[in-house]
Length: 289
Ligand SMILES: [Cu+2]
Image (cartoon, rainbow, N blue to C red; front, side, top):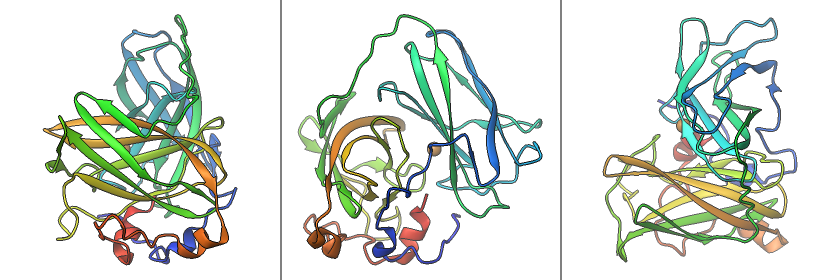
């Protein structure tokens, strides 16, 4: 069961500011991502290992379950390529570890999303890993609102609004037919990670609707509310599960500057007709991360 966080039923509370970002520091609220090790070369099998320690250097092991897991680890190359979302296991020595092989060389950012019980809020700590090998950059220079992964086609509709809240709706098809058999994954029918291109700031994203609420359908549409701190390009990664397989589907979108009108009317988003969760304080509290 996810933690209820008061006051998040109101979209207005989410109006993003330039400070409303996470995942830019190795240390936050007295907690630090330490002892990070990872395979040194592309293609080399090994593990990612790290700890989250408090101000006295003691490993934090008392954490709340958020989105079905005690810790979420995002690994992505700094150009936005080679995104992975994995769930390391906590070991008796206080380290978090998971077998890992980098597909390609380059500099990677790792983001550890964790909700220490003592803190009562989710924090995102980040660090970097350099992976040796022949480096072939894949810079994201254009927007990409349609993405194909393993025969699944996903199309993004909606606008990311800087300084406001925008609704993002993903429509999933296979061979032109709507996919309506999405399976719950991390407490929703989809899990969205959004990073600002450049500094890879980690955005707040809230899925709309919860599987089993009687309203939210298992596709073909998956909806989120997202806040962008500033105009510019963002890298989005939609994780979804279908046929027992979890896939990460990448997108690139440009956030527009908010106008007064958009700020006043943000979140109205009924045009897509899925309607789930907009006024549902519990759904938004559940989704807070
Ligand atoms: Cu996760």
